[in-house]
Image (tube, rainbow, N blue to C red; front, side, top):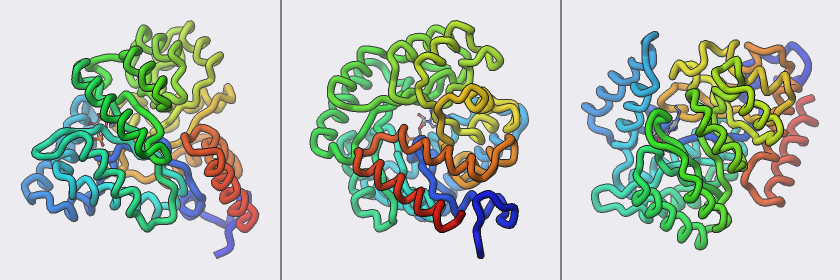
Length: 346
Ligand code: 6MZ
């Protein structure tokens, strides 16, 4: 089939699938597809439980809390070193099949059964290193908002130690978890930064002006979701002004927001404010397993709901390369790949 970047011959879905893509916001356990869960040998019962819970996201009155119940189920599939290893490999393979050329995978180190947090991270790293797919993969380690100071500091110590051993793969630290619980610990993230870790923080997934202000003043390299910063979406004018000055690249995850009910629908997603004001952003999946999506589908939603051309979509991906935590050489390589694709498909 002949592809044309600006022509009308190519359908949206084929274009979005064919486009080389950059994924910057994907949680490992939320990304487990049903196929992977089965491969991991989840008991039939827990598969059933997973499906029962999947129904939650089809309810019109579902809550963000209910969505968080799904992660616990997905995490039961990765409670041993081998299952963490296999899960990592499967997720990478599925992203590569979707023509993702650069993936920043994030996950929360867990000590479970006879597995320590360090062993959890080592298993993910082994999954990344053994991957045969043609894709660059980096790792971001998450701190769960739910965890207390002692647990978070313990995680950071392990992360810092592991990063010293694997600086080429472990690139950053993230704050995630149920936004109704816990908060942002600036000291912890400053310490991570002092140790050379890049930072990306889930920010404003629900209205929370004080925390948003704290996070923006900390100036992480990226923020996740950024839902309630603009005043039309529940944020304060002051924080929006602060954001527009800081211009911190936002990681958008449209389906996740629509399913969790933090965005009304695709067409009313806050991404429109970023496009209107020429602010930096990328398009991502968040949890492709839990939300039954793929990066190609996310691109299609953006293409179908906003006044964009296929060339605009290419530009969005290309610009996202500048937000990633890769090395300068890798960034040059990614830009070259994108340029080559444009040349052969334009
Ligand atoms: C905040 C989220 C999230 O770390 O076990 N996570 N945190 N907002 C979201 N939007 C819906 N989606 C996922 O992957 C699952 C964990 O990622 C975080 C939650 O802490 C969840 O438990 P890992 O690989």
